[in-house]
Length: 274
Image 1 (tube, rainbow, N blue to C red):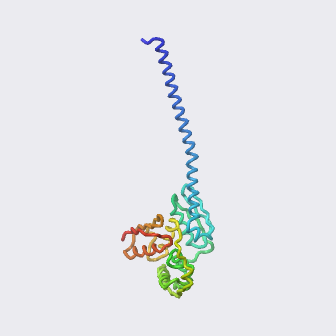
Image 2 (cartoon, one colour; image 1 turned 180 degrees about the vertical axis):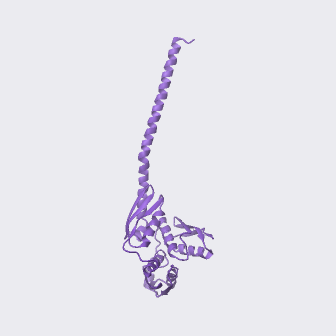
Image 3 (spheres, one colour; image 1 turned 60 degrees about the horizontal axis):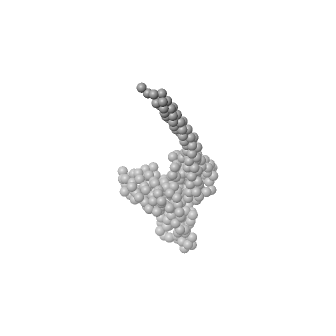
């Protein structure tokens, strides 16, 4: 049998204990609500910073600064989903912009809504082939698209202009011959000492996304290779190739073509032979 004094102590303890439990529960609820509110603010802010970084990286990339600088391209990113809108001068630029953005860290998808200024050339026409030959020369460092004049008539490509060496002259013709649709190449280029002096020998610093885009576009324009069957990843200028090759010759050719792309430091060709 408890005394009155003992009963009062028990009641006081119970009230205090229950009060502490109630206060702890209340504080826990306040803490949970506060954290949830902060997350609602911080997560969108973090996502916004990530999207801003994607847009900034795209605009400052080698591809956008070099090949696409004359085009009117708008870039929008929301949670890594990028939308491209605007006007470009040719079909190549549409694909080049998309491939560059797709290779950037944090990008989950690319909705390419770019439009071409004017009517694009008809597929397999002489004008279409001229664009493809220019594209083939554009990304390779051992040849010079700037010093090469290209004329196409009835599928026959005539090359004029200046080469820095006999080797460059022959390689220019080799690249042109490998364009799907080209029937023949007439090489009328000359070797010029002046071209030798003006040829850029400084290695340009090119970001990984731009390297990946250039590699994919080069594999696309050459008939002896398939970009659809080739996986391309670039890290610090080192290109890793995956996917399938029809034979050893194609695998070796891919290695050769990729090794001559601007910005590529080395290649790891892990393609398997079908």
